Image (tube, rainbow, N blue to C red; front, side):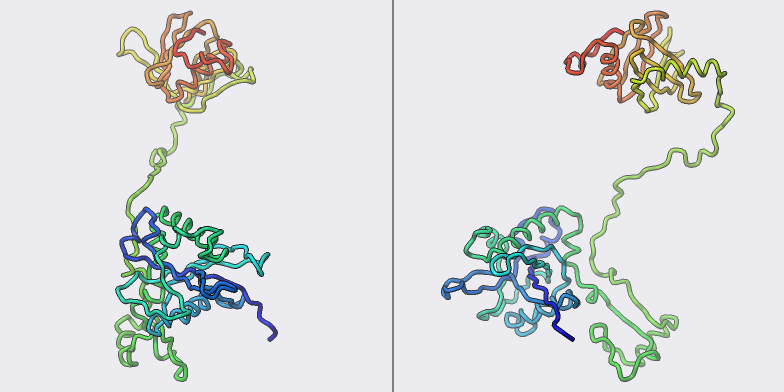
Length: 391
């Protein structure tokens, strides 16, 4: 078969101290414990340093299975020979190695396990032990003598990774929720299709006899296979809050009334468009704005929706419905005033003594464009913030 290529990996086995920390939006290192192992320093047997669990696995093998089996086997001495079963294997990222392995890379995998219970771990020389993550991070640095340089870099990155994970909704509960195989409550298969010489998967075997399985199969409408949703009973957090709803305002309105669309004569159309587009430096605010013409009394107000255009010639208003130029005022023939809270612009025509108001959230921008293009201010002039000006 030839030599199998081996890949060096490091494993961070972490567990929360209590279930309350799983729902906390704020990250606290003291809420977690991490599994580390002590090894003697080279040439100094009495002095020891802490390192993460590490092993070598075949590059083309099932990483998840290999790492979980390694954690199970390594933790048997501290768990009454039962081993610790990880929920899942999460690849964090790769790190550059130092020392004899300089130039090579190794991956760090996170293995979350169950919440800490009240049972005391068995101390066994040479075996890993759990440490409070906060105590570890207090003395951890890339130059710390308490850890290997590779372990220090990985611990610092792990601390930052957990902090970022706490800011993501439901990320921490998802990391520590039961493994998929543990969330399967019942599995029923048709014994007629089972191979007699082959035993069923021990992980999914629920201890049913053939008769019991047949009874369940018949009660489930003669199903060949019954699979319950593993999310049921998993206590997975969910939210029914709606963040944003966008409704198309045109839904349900039907086809437009084409009879209301007015097409002007050619000469009028050419004159209307040329007055707006003949100058290349046109500033058009492509937002539907409300224009209110004020006359003798409030009962005679006329409201239309317009596009507003500002260029070096003056102010131009185009009817949104007919696309016809409604009004064009040259600089020197009108004056403007910015309204309260920058919500509207009041325009006064000096020629026909008419007043009208343009209501828009872009009122401040319209005034700045009028002042700039009329030549009253330069780009760096602070007078652009004045509320009153003449065209």
